[in-house]
Image (tube, rainbow, N blue to C red):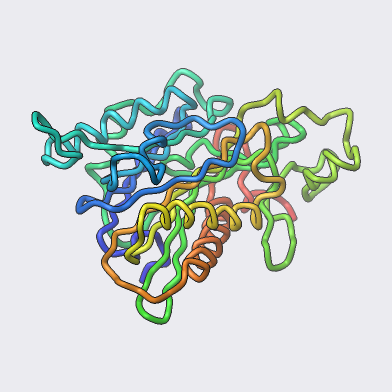
Length: 327
């Protein structure tokens, strides 16, 4: 096991990264198909094909999920993923063609690097070409390249975010994995210790100012910016399992996985975030594990993936990473 979402057999992950423009995209491929679900909690989402994942709607399986930077422009990268799948005759069967279904979500990274370079169809296609099983690159790559966190005092006091992954293996061989791109308005917090790992950098001296203190106690009020006026956020991710689940259960898995987001990002699901989690179930293992157990494992994997995303990030675009800050 690699401690990654690719511990779920059959899943492949690929990144496309532009370090000069500080943006990128990430694809999760399930070429044999997986039951898909989604739960959107943030108030500022940017999405594609999420309606098809609702339990009552027609499509039962998807073959790829795209996470992208570039704000709404980045949704174009899903077209490249569609082309990759179409070339391999993978997609939803109709009488005249197989139509690849590629749900996608974006994060806003235009305030770092170049605002005019965004992931496009060619970027999505390239991410598919390099998609592989095994260890997954983390930090400032793919959809995490331009991610930042802790923006309550403005971008000049933000800390670098990134993309991270984690997994859990249950007693009967069921695997639950997560892949998360962390671009939050709030802080990233270690759920076990309560310590802020990344957030708004203190205006005087070292360390971080808790976003909740800025919002509720008025700390650094003169510098604080309204989360409603800076749509520069969003934590987006994918959880996956090899368990055999229905579409309703997969959507519930996505809902429960958000617990991990709220454990590790504070505050989460704000008016300035488009927080979203996709869920996939490949159906390889018929399990007696309850959905409560699977959802708890998913939440733990999400929280760990978020921590890994920021601790493995590198300084880019003038925004320092955790490892480059004086403690």
